[in-house]
Length: 83
Image (cartoon, rainbow, N blue to C red; front, side, top):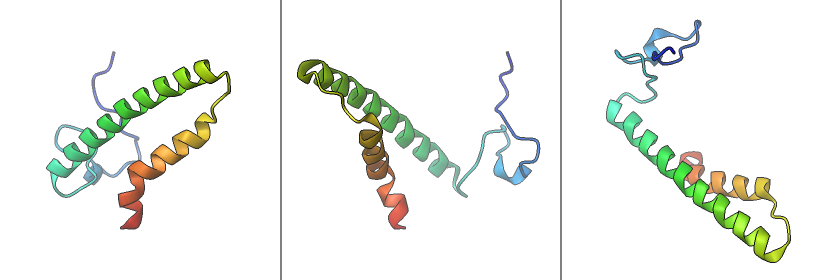
């Protein structure tokens, strides 16, 4: 198993830090902060999926998961889209 981060062959080297991890912001702390927020969003989505499953089971009605996912993503990324 390869432990090195995936890096496309044609990607500019300026997009990666000294350890080979992708860099999106000038401040490395901001990259780590965004990673934390994305991890939290993933955890929240898992809980949302569980609730949807329970609601479907209780009501017997299917839930439009694509619509719910779109609304969730829109809420999470709204501050970025406003910028």
